[in-house]
Amino acid sequence: MTKTTPLTQTRMRDGVWEGVLPRKQKPELRVTHREAELHDVTVTAEGEGLWRVRVGVPVDTLSDGVQTYVMSDAQTGQKLGSFAIAAGSVLSEDLRAEVDLLRSELDMLKRAFRRHCVETGA
Image 1 (cartoon, rainbow, N blue to C red):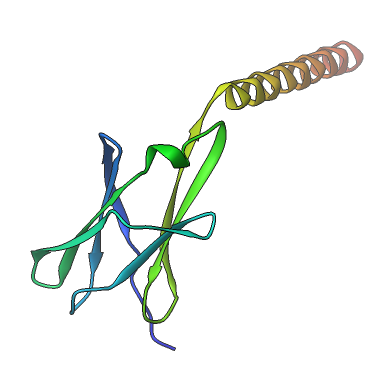
Image 2: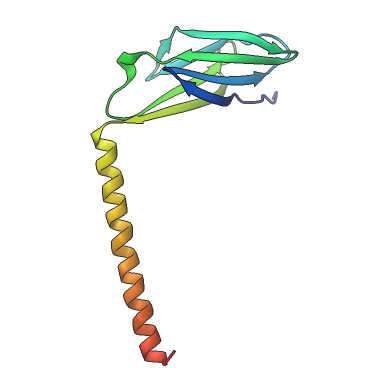
């Protein structure tokens, strides 16, 4: 089994995900979203043994929730990395629910701690 070094994200800007991949030879990448292949993928030399990867994120793949994009070696099928984009009101509602749950748990812990302090005379 050969060990591969995964893609490392450098930034996401103007709808383009960017990263670097250390490889001796130019890699052939396959990027998918929900098993559909993305075609705006470029790989250029960044230096000796280092390749800059750019993936244009199609607007029609964006919607409420979390969208995951998977990058793999086109020849072997081995996963090299992935990135996700979260958007929409569904996400904000989920975050509000989580914060409310954390607040209620924190209030419960504070009450239990205060009760413990009263009972033990601390």
